[in-house]
Every structure is written in C-alpha cells, then in structure tokens.
Image (cartoon, rainbow, N blue to C red; front, side, top):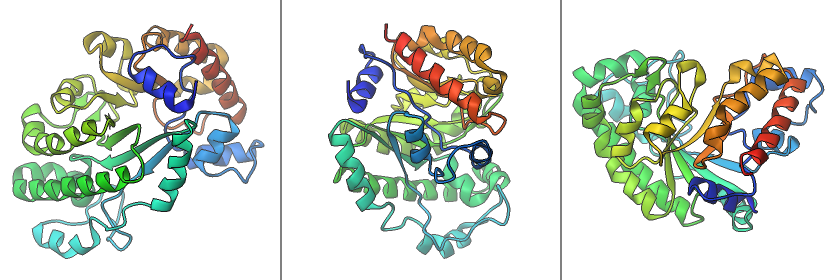
Length: 330
C-alpha cells in the first residue's frame, strides 16, 4: 500500500496494511545537536532528511505565514508587534504576502504525491494564534475586551489571505490534510470561553472550512494542552481532527474516541517517557493500541522529541513504532 493511500484509508477508518510511521513535528534543534554528538551524521539537519534516515514515511508540511520577510519582530518571546489599529495600518504592507510559499518546491512535492509516495499537508495560522502573534500574549487577552473590532478586522483579513493561498495551493495539488496552528488550550483546558470562541473565531472558521472540505482536504487543529473540552467547539465549525494530544496535559485518546467516535487524531505518545527505555515505551504503545486498532488515529510523539532522548533511545522508539504500527493493522 502506498503512503498516500494508507493515510487516506486510515483517516476513513478503513483497513490498512500497517499504520503510518510518522514523526509529525520538526525535530528540536537541541535534540538534533545531541544526536550529532552521539553519532548522527552532521549532514543530517533538515527534518525531512532525518526522517528519511530513520526510514519514516514521507509527510511533507508546507507552512504558510501571513507575515512577509520585512515584518517587524517582537522584542521578546510572546511580546507584541503592534498595540493598536494605527500600528496595524503601519505594518499592513508587510502582511499577507503575495508569494506565501515556494511554488517550485510544492510542484516537486506534488510529483511524489501523485506517485503515492508522499502525504502533503499545509499549516495556516489560526484565528486565536494570529492576533496573539501581532498583539503579544498579554495584549491579545486584553484585546478581546479592549479592541474587539481590531481583532475581528485582523481575522477577516487573515481569512481572505487564507482563501487566496488555498486557491494557489490547489492550482498545483490538493493536499491530503491541513492544520490550523492555534495552541488555545493549556493543561486545564481552553484559554477562552465558548462565547468568546463563538464571537471571535467561529465566523472565520465557517468561511474557510467549507472551502477546504469542498476540495477534499481534511481540516485539523493543532493545539497543545488539554483539548478535551475544545473538541465539541471545533466540531461545530467543521474541524475533523486534532493533534498533538499531550499526555502531560491529561489528554486521554481513549476518552476522546469514546466521546467523539468519528473524530480524527494523531500524536498522543507521551514524549516524557521516551528516555526511560524500551519497557516504558512498550507500555505506552500498549496503552494506545486499542485506539490505534480502531482507525482514524495516527500514533506519533505528542510533541517534539525532547533532548533528554538519546540517539540510541530514539532508535528503539522508531523500531517499536514500526512494530506497533504493523500490530495495529492485524
């Protein structure tokens, strides 16, 4: 079974020859630095090259950024780029770039996809994520109350940018799935209320999600933290899946599957036990196996592989991942 076909069948809850063998997130630079010291070739730096080295399936992610190269940067992590509508007007020439991605690169990826050897997905900044980038973490939270019209204006501009980019991507190939980068939950649940979600995010999701589905692209949301209560909100706007299902935040993939049987998922493997060795990793795979066998779920690390995982430990993880991805299809 080809890579592309396997993904489509799994996400349709159909039988597969084995589950996809995937590390969805880019490798943490500190992790790669450690692995280089432990014998990984120094030539292997790009995530796609490292995945190929470990013989993982070919999943190619196209990141779309609504900020051009000349857009100002915050002075610190989580800091603000703008404070008010005047600032937004000033930086707007540096937002929503005409060339949002490399068409040449996507054309090359499309050839692999057409041959069935690659799954293509793209990521758009979501309607919680994007205003936070511009206004800063603290400013964003206040803006729901102090600058509601600015928030809505920015998100309407964003959705129009997304719709244009979607047409451009689909003129080259139809991605197998996509994700909205959001990170709108923490370890106790969503960082906003349902009424706030309905006012500030729902109107924009309902403009783009139908367009994605019309093209056969599965829409996922990428949110860290405990996403359990968030899922019902996402379903209302047509989102079909979620990741990375962080175990440390209390996410239970079995509970999600029980409550939302048709909802798609990937991730879920507790990254914090990877350094503990084979026995601990086997136990984690066994915890996830019942849901793996049901389909609609692609097991993977629940975020980036942390730097406390040695190269030899990661090799053990990859071997176990391949083993259990076969078992899940039996």
